[in-house]
Image 1 (tube, rainbow, N blue to C red):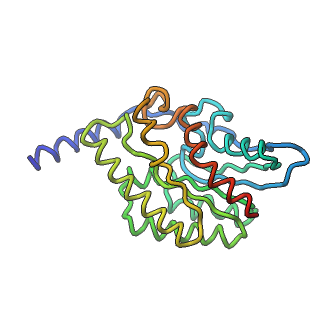
Image 2: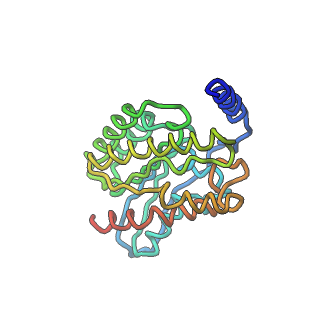
Image 3: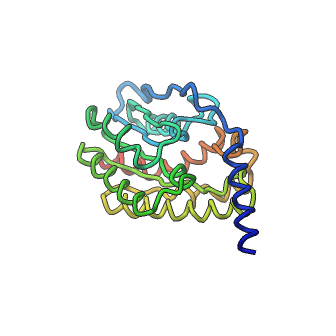
Length: 238
C-alpha cells in the first residue's frame, strides 16, 4: 500500500507540474493613488507571490492589492499603493527581491501575502520561519506597520486526491510557521486559509480562476474581506 501510494502521488505530482497554469507574463500593472484628495496620507505596499501580482484577477481592479487600497480610500485615507508581488516568490526571495525596495523607499503600512510556493517547493519549515522573521524585522526597522498572511488553503481544485489533501496539510504547516515567526517579530497575522478555505471548497468554479489554482476576481474579493479588518486596525495605529 505504501508503494502504491507513493506511485500515485508521484504520478499526481508529475501531472500537477505539467498542468497549464495561467500565464504570469506580462506582469499586471498594479499601484496608484486611491481615496479622497483630503484624506489622511498612507503609503501602502503589498509584497508577495503571483497572487499579490494579481494573476487570475483578470484586471487590476480585481486584484486584492487594489481592493485593499480602495477600501482604505473609502475609509478616508489617501492611499499611495506600491505593489511588488512577483510570480514564484517564496519567503526567502522577499529578502533579496522585494524588502530592499522598501528599505530604500519606506512605507507606512506593508502587507505580505506569501507561502504558497514554499508549500509546492517543500521549503523546510525551519527555513520558512527564519526567513519570515527576518522579513518582518527588516520591514519593521523602516518604521512600517506589518501585516502578514501565510499560505492560503492549498487544497487546490487543480490537484487530485491524495495530493490535494497532502498539499492542504503542508499548507497548514507552512502558514503556521509564517504566523509564528511573523507574530514573534511584531507583525499582525491574518488567518487567511481559515477565513476563506471553506468558501473556496464550496464554490470552486466561482472563486477559482480557469487554472483551478489561482483565485478569480471573486476569490480575491474573499481574500480582501479576510485581510481588511487587520489591515484597517494596523492603519489606525499609525
